[in-house]
Length: 307
Image (cartoon, rainbow, N blue to C red; front, side):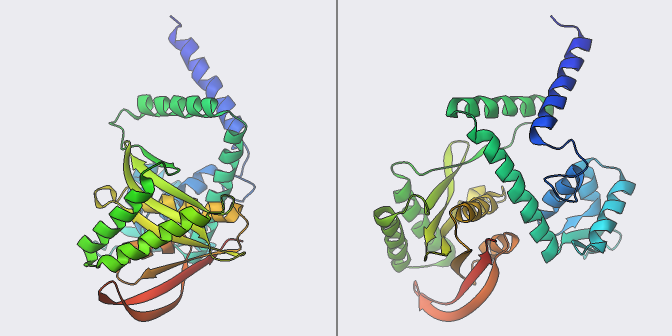
């Protein structure tokens, strides 16, 4: 059995190798002015509307003085805004501004593209081995009980029936919508299955610990515009970031497929979904009252550029 010193050397050698692979040895990350730590701070801030500075410092394990200087730089660049907590005036909270969220999305997109290029050079079997090994490392070092495993995958037989059934059931239960909504969902799914352009249209199923937990579709509206449709997250699985992951994946696909913009139609009563769309960079373009699904509603069109 190797001595402890040999194991230390092996871990350090792996760290040097892997940091070289992911390209973070330089002063900046992904050809941007931001270091890996700064990008990590942006990632944490992007996960919620507002974050207590003390919570951010504790979660990242960074020095208080260093974090304060970093946030001051972000504030000077117009990326964050700091204010006193509404519930405890002794505490400070920080949030990303619109410019900050755009910067984060740029970093996130570049990071995802780099990993995508890394994985495309590997076979399916090699990809599975790599991910399994990473999960093993994380499980050993985490020391805590692992959280639920969230996976986004392509639909399988029976999944589109589930999309229709769960949309109909959830919206009836939570908003009292009638069967005309189920008719609309069934029509959207049928059109997708019958006319799908596999190069420019796609659907995803989110799974948590092997069980279906959400879905979304990206469909062609016209040659330049994609449309996000039928975003859904099971109530028991909300709070895990599934909605944001589905929307972000839809946006990335639409960009790779060559669309210039992506749009969606929703209703103002769907407050949680609207927050997900806002965090993903969508902006409200128009709204109009209508009577649908047995209720008086206000329909909204949201959109964002893919440039």
